[in-house]
Amino acid sequence: MMNGLSAPGGPAAEDHHGVGFLTIGNILSLLRIPLGFMFLLVSEPKWVAAIVIAGAATDLLDGLVARVTHTESEIGALLDPFCDRVFVFLALVSFLPTGRIDWAAFLILILRDIFTGGVFLVGRLAGKEMPFHSRLGGKITTALQVAALLTLIFYPDYVKVPVYLAGVAAVYAIIDYGTAGVRKMNPAASEAA
Image 1 (cartoon, rainbow, N blue to C red):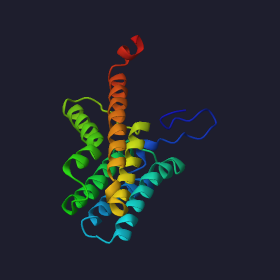
Image 2: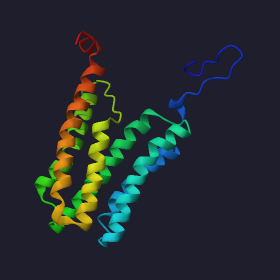
Image 3: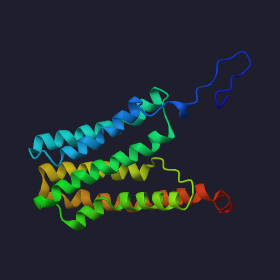
């Protein structure tokens, strides 16, 4: 049964929304923020790569740990993409002064983040419930952002390939998030289609 109600003679079902803020999954998400700031302090390629890999590992593990430990929550669903965006933004900002990435590539790599963050904020300011859950297009875009970061570290002359691929994935993700959001906010319109 739902909402902590128990079936006759059975134990109460768990309510994952009351798990608290400092769960292992949320801590893994939050680790990406200090890792992101480390990009501004570290310049040795092997250490920069280690930061990228550590950030990617926390991104892969936070949701998995939350599901395994039954500590999924709405705050965790919001915290994960927020920490992703901070991490990637700080990483990319650290490469701008080096000349390895220009403003156009920077904007392509954060295109999806600008769109989804903007839509989320505008929706919240308008008083709309804005669901924000991971989708395949977003996951692909994040993977390509990580690939672009690793390419910037070791093969900066070839960074245009992952940047353009991330741009295509970002456009797909924007369309995917947009259509899913419209369906969620207006279920009657999606049923009529």
